[in-house]
Image (cartoon, rainbow, N blue to C red):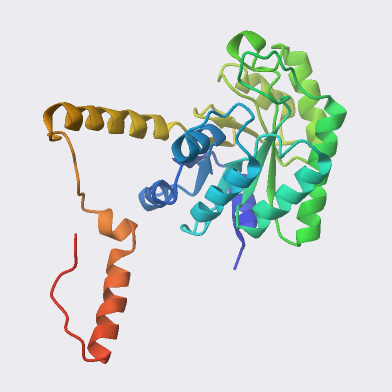
Length: 291
């Protein structure tokens, strides 16, 4: 049976565009799998906000991301791609955390070249090309030592400029130079946030050498799209319901049940397990369980 890394690589190598469905918890990953997505994606901002109520500006750790990614990977049968930020601050960190991701059943990660703290008022810039190549090399070494396949997506933030809160300068020439360098270091795919408009030129530049991925939008020629952002809708809806409950004592707009709810949490399986145990041991049963 193919492992998660092998499954994800086969999806990418197939050459057909696919979307890794948005997830930020085990249940939302199950939902993405249930509706038919071939893979799922866990964003760092989605996970830091939803599970720890902190921003994704360098304070959120890889230990915390791996903890949640592990829960998700073990709840689904499709591959999970995780946002691994910079994989820590040293080459040893990059090796160690990659090994942890692989051990927990994550199929692949994207690792970025922005300097921490990021996405803040600090003008941070990007790390050197050589340093990012060394980081990718450490990931490749950890993959080899693990004996399992693992997909390495190099994230280049050169097109995420300072005025937009990123660490790049907006230079297409530099973005391409970095992309070629990251591919040479062993990356399996490239990813350039945050806008769709440069992607066709990047796809044309890299051709068949290395696939280009996107986040949050699909662009012709890009190999896959890592969908994210659903946590914002969930949080906004919860805020609306909380205000309604606080102000009126009830929530008219709430939906506390839906047909797929039981299936998504394996309710029928565990109900049958308990029923079989009760019947075998002469304990009483009833025709229904709690909804």
